[in-house]
Image 1 (cartoon, rainbow, N blue to C red):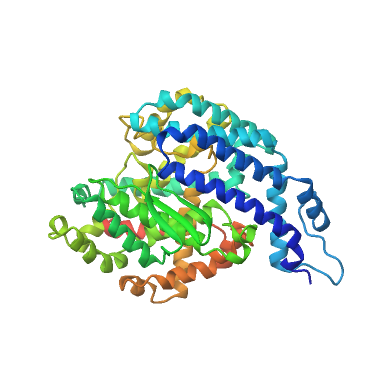
Image 2 (image 1 turned 180 degrees about the horizontal axis):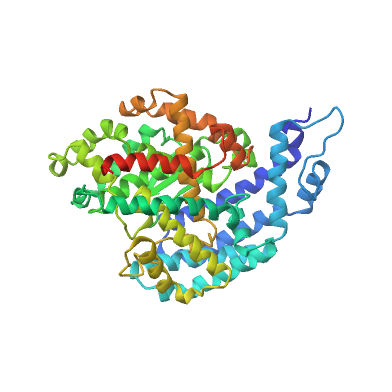
Length: 510
């Protein structure tokens, strides 16, 4: 039987490419955290050169020659010979390398370099435009990035919409056609549920979350929660950034960021938990396969499921706060001494339309994603022009959530994604919500006392379950195959909808 050892000529080259990509990621992380403002242009060139070099090495004749010995160049299927077949890990590795190679081969290296440079520059302009609350400052860069992403879709090819080509980068196999039914099912039950909640006689006071909270103590508490989740600070860091994110250079070096606002207790707390979920996935990947697809996360939808599982299924649960609320109460005794755990639980689960996606509740969050899904489809397909975005954004916010941003910073400029060219990324957040509940419900079946463990502050049992079931496999299975292996079914809105209907039905006495 042929094993991964047989593929050493290929994996050696892949490891070199990954190290180049990791170096570029270090520069990107520094750009978002500690780089002086004046270094932006030089940094964009540095990152572009490294990403261009990695692309050139991936599409080299050397890689193509090695791959052609083992896979059908038309389908990516591994060649089997009688009595000498590939084992499953090797077959999966070849499938995924071929997928990466065939996609990269369609993109000219000079285009990859240009796209990297323009996205890096756009990120920096976006941050300044957001700070100054002015969309016109960002508009020229957005036009450039959008034009390049449309070009990328043309290079990659598609059957129905150029948006499908970009979506497939982040969630393999997903298309507009596969996502629309999921969104439709969600909307059909979430909108009526939201209406019932707004009409409920239960009124939740969440003003305690907007008291003045010392920022250093917020960070200290966030760090404490990350440690309890199993995030390894010997292999990770916690820093500040404009938009919280997680980046990984190797399973032994995974870094998360958060943001802290004096009058927004939830912001630091839940972004720490959210990014910690991402960080656990990256720290849980099999180090032996670093540099190959088996040492990489399977999709952004699955990755997002890990952050949302920890943030919502765990971090917004009663069990979690039975243990952590006394600690938080002691940390901010002067603010929380008269607030009991049930009041706090209700406050952090208060449902009301809000302007900012990353601070939205579990119900309205998916509505934030739906409007972005529609907007970026129209942008990529040329049905909407970038200069019209603020007006379209505000119109859809009113349509979906009944509120209108008063500024660009809390409206169209709130997300970093379009600045670095991540068109097709937003739908993976909703997929992550759906996967997260499916996985958590399965974990509760297989770990009967899971909620008691969480209530005792013991979360390593969940962390180990996720690592064994999801993290360690990398891209060995497709997203759908992985979901079926873990839960027995493909992704479905039903577990998520049942979960929120039960939870918020109780909170709001529906």
